[in-house]
Image 1: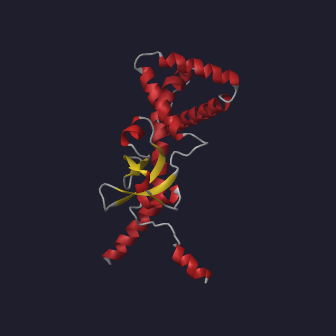
Image 2: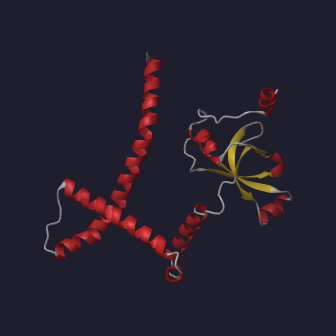
Image 3: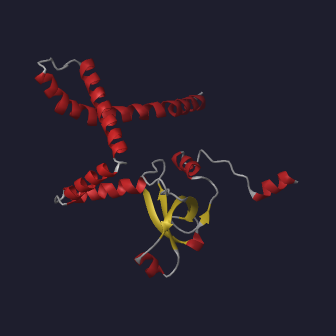
Length: 220
């Protein structure tokens, strides 16, 4: 009976988790974007029109949702306009001005570098999946190849070294950057998506794989 209840609980978590995460993200956007925008912009508009600002729970929530949607639409329009040369020129001038502000410029450059790294469309950040001995010899971890090491790291090691990101389980957004000699890397056939499923599930979700011996047996 306890085992069945545990299985039911696990099945319920699997079904509820995507819905819960979606609701959490939506509420996070409303609380951190919609509420400040409605207070800064919508409240003065209501005052100018001599209208009553919604104070009830439902009215305030609706105002925050509308403010969130307005911000999302404006960001979308900004992305579309940025494709034009004139808009791109204005954005570049704005970035130069922001970079000259002490403190603010450093934060802006750091955030922009991170965003640019993960938003590259022509080159995936994770190039392929690999198996490396980590955290010690005889123990293996699934990692993602990001690039070949360059500069001082490559020069000081004296051999071809590859940057491998080894994520943690079940949260793959944190992890370790290990620099492994190319000869010590075992490249895997699984896709980045399948590897992510394997890591997030703690090894419970294993992607399908046919070994060379299985393929040879089927051909016979």
